[in-house]
Length: 449
Figure: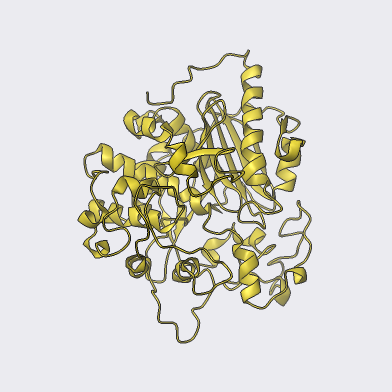
């Protein structure tokens, strides 16, 4: 979640642009209303380019069109039929929940004010609510940013279950190229939990910071500046990161951790992360559409945040996990893997570097195996990506929520509705769905137990 905090704001400052110069955007103003990329050719000030696509409001168009801006690779759904998502529509728009600062809002209001593109709820495997906004359609693959990490973490857990990876072994024992880096003596489990001791700066107003170097590898800033001599691929970049502190001491959100996992996956399986996602998840669950993944300039996938997928296929992935690894008549994941997904991390380790933070602890309770855990009554878990991407799993209500958004804020900020209001409202919706079904609750044991 820390990867892109204030990313757009700082990018503009460094570029010498005034924040006030950007148009004031109504919460429900879609890219078509704004005239972005409309007509041929679009007006010069309405064009979305590799150099400006992370700026609000241009991101309202960009997050549905990443493959038109960046190099990507297809994640093949296979040639089998799409699995059926049965529908049982419910009028959930008026459902209310208490959110930040004691506000009470409806789901309709939340969707309008949080720059929603796609939103879908499954209850007990059926689509009970589905809405598309900002020009998005059901077939559109949307940028998921760090929600990608949960697909990668789940792939790694599957490899652990298969005996192909030992989570207690060091990264250096799998990837000798990283032996002298920050990750060399970290265990795979510490990388999964983001408790590695890494000297990693997230100073978004400093083009020399680590986050900017990571972004340059994947073209976040467009064409590399003249005279650039830094890393050009993710595999050149990762060895440059140095150790700081003690592994396992505290949770420190560093996206390159997931790219390290991606490297191990490649080394162990001989296949790219996206090929693993295709074969292990998309094809067995009967995805409706191919997904795709963002690449660096030499065709290496952004394991830390490059997945683009439809809301319905993201929901299928979540439903498979809620069903203990079973989907479409197939065993997709071992039940032991699903059980590990729902096992929470250590809350003391999680909050060690974020004392008093209003989100770390009060909203999210831990991070484990590349999944976020919530301390609410249902012990929900979620894949989360910046700018409002969620695959939220409630094991008690048997509910999957998928939210795809193009918020101007990466996280928090003045528009913290996705990260704070969202989980609070999802709990209220879960309670509402339980009441609709006569108040019956499945056993609270997590799927796979």
